[in-house]
Length: 313
Image (cartoon, rainbow, N blue to C red; front, side):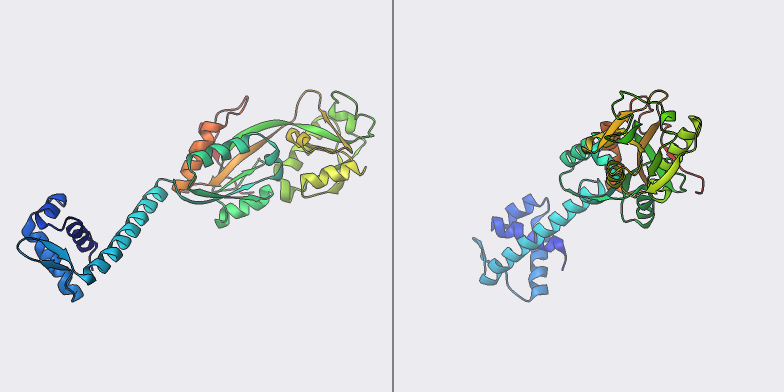
């Protein structure tokens, strides 16, 4: 059964007058009468009782009208939902993030702006390491991620959204815990607690490079996969660490967060997605991201700073 026959019938049933119904439908009366007759023949049921003076719904016609209206309303909703999904205004989007990103203002600001603009989109957040996000992006389990570069993965595009300094994380009773700033070289004799390369991607390499530039090779005494665990190990006296500055929002009475003396060691958070992903949901999310994030001292997202990694790990 064609949907247009249902639409013709509902208009005639509402008007109970073929001429007025034909005017609403922008068609001539004879073709409309023929289409209603065709519908009745297809159903094998008389829907309308016609006389020279008036048109009335039969009993079956009244029941059929209620069902026809429900069907047409469902079709209209389906069309609207499909159109909204094509514009990125409805659907579901899964986003990964490193744990430290939740302590920083940029990500909540982006998510708040996105939710306000697209309230019909369901957002699912997944706390993942940077390495786990790369796997999830490749497998399609998430559409976007907030991770720690450097990232050298073919087919993954990254855009810097935050650049912040590393800070020294020291036990509260450490000899340098009361300093306003400390040179990185002052930690040369301390054991380090670090996030392994498999979870932190570039954090370990960044710290190693900074320490070598300061004149020493750090002695890694312990590894931990989560920032909260690293802070806990530092508080327990197992060593010191270097972590992104936003970790200072993770209050812990057993540690001191001390800025490094210049030159600062900067670390980034980047938004990542599959290169060439044509999802309207992703396009809408990235548009909000570009509007919401401004990186101090960095090229704004969407410019030449955005790059598609082209080298194998």
